[in-house]
Every structure is written in structure tokens, then in C-alpha cells.
Length: 141
Ligand SMILES: [Zn+2]
Image (tube, rainbow, N blue to C red; front, side, top):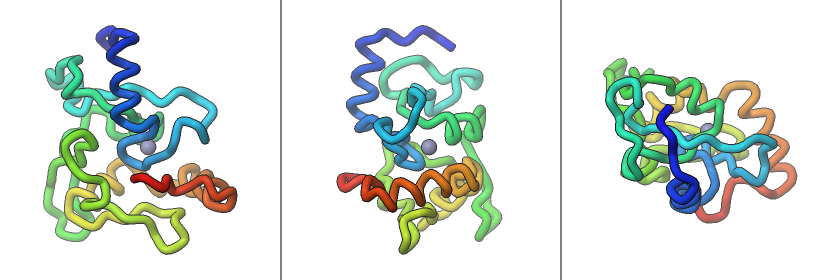
């Protein structure tokens, strides 16, 4: 991965509100450092520049890997993955009533939830504890 300056990393972290752009897990609730990710993967020619960088948790980032598209489980169509820099989270996702699952509202949202496995057992288990503690979901997403 290309070197990202400390100043640029700080800027991206602030822009992303110190949380994963996909599952919204907040930096303050996890025990490792959220990663700066390439929205368009570096391996596919994505540049290490501000407009192509965002913040992601290790889970979302590792499942996203080199993907830029995924299949919407409802329509079975291949669509672009959600872009947390350019798209509005609330337009494409919502929380389940108990806030422990992320539901896709659009083809893009559904494909991203499925592809990034945003409701896997580890994510859900953590969300249950965060919700019980009153610290999740974020109040300003
Ligand atoms: Zn995440």
C-alpha cells in the first residue's frame, strides 16, 4: 500500500467521523485502529489521494478487498458497492429495529451488506453489546 502522510490520514479520519464508512463502527468502541481504505482498490489502479480514501474497519475492508461491484441478493444484478465518500449512508442502509443489523434499502445497499458480510456473527455480537451500553448506533450518522 502506498504511504499515506500523517496529515492526510488525520484529515480522512476527521472526514469519516472516526468510524467505518460501511458498518459505522466507531473507533472509540473497538480495540484496534480503523484502516484507511482505497474506495477504488489500489490493485485496480485506485490512487492514494484524498478523494479515493476513506475509513473502514478491518472486517468491512477485508471483505471488500479488491471488489468494486457485487450482486444485489434481491434482484441478482451486479451493482457498484457503496461509496461512503460520495453516497449518503441513510439513503442506502438502515438499522434493524434493535439496531444490531444493517439492512440494505437499495440494490447498492443490499449488495454491500451481503458482500462485506456486515451482519456476520462478530459484527452482530459487538453491536448487541454496544447497543446495550447505549453507545450505538451513533447519534449523528
Ligand atoms: Zn465496518
